[in-house]
Image (cartoon, rainbow, N blue to C red):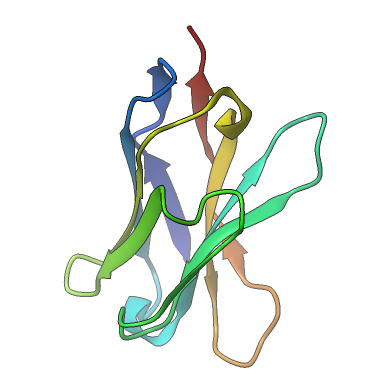
Length: 118
């Protein structure tokens, strides 16, 4: 059974940092592109960052570029999202997703809450 489990969320003050992790199981992790999305109840779901199967190419949304870094460890079947200089507008539930190359949608984790406030 394919499963994605996120962790690392929490509450942090503006300017702080968090590192999210997402562990995959039940599929060949290294064959899937990985994405981080976020969802705030008052906003549309937003693609935050994505990384290809090799881990050599990452892409970022305009709102996080320069502050967030996506990476992956295929041997550990884990994708990471390092979030620095967090802002209140980064508050959301963060989800990881595994997408097979060539497809537009894939599998989702259950999400982890990130709250940035003073």
